[in-house]
Image 1 (cartoon, rainbow, N blue to C red):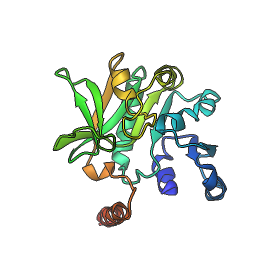
Image 2: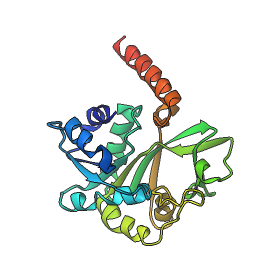
Image 3: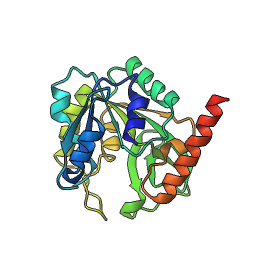
Image 4: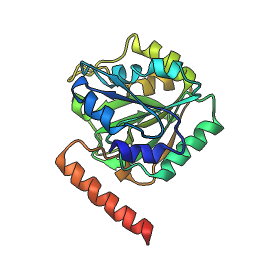
Amino acid sequence: MLHRLLDLYRPHVRRVVVVVHPSFADQMAEAIRGVEPPVELVEQPVPTGMLDAILLARDAVRASAAEHVWITWCDQVAVRPETVNRLAAIGLANPGAPLVMPTVRRRHPYIHLQRDAAQRIVRVLHRREGDAMPEDGESDMGLFSLSREAFLDRLGEFAKAPEAGSATGERNFLPFIPWIAARDTVLTFPSVDEMEAVGVNTPDELRLIEAHLSAREAGDRR
């Protein structure tokens, strides 16, 4: 999955940071040996949440000249190149936007982005945290583009007092979306299809994504 993501993002990304548990660090170091773009591993010994994992990349970002920082989960392997290209184009056209992200409409969402009458995202609902979920919802795709300032400064400000999951107790990244939307502009755009948002967390999801990617690549060859 990691090598597929490196292939997908290589046209746009100059440096990659992968957050790993120490028990997998040696395997990961072997897997990324000699790959392009260069990959740096940082370890998260205690799984306190995705927010803390993302913040482990701050030193690498600070040492770079990156104007944008992209965040993705390593199991989001069905994202299409068209979506990645659009994310890059919108970020370049709106350099001051703190957050740009694709979203997807889907039935029985695992995550739902709740909007107000002005279409501003005001809350993120999580099925695993026990929130009441709508039948039809709008989800993130586990793919986000942050400006340098948003990543280094505003995410750090948010992290001083983030919302902890009511069921898991984890420090999640997704509540940063309504937090920054209340202070600045968040730009969203629709994905090409809802399969892009499916992560690989179970054997059933693995089979689903394998079948989807095989069919998609067969269609691309025709």
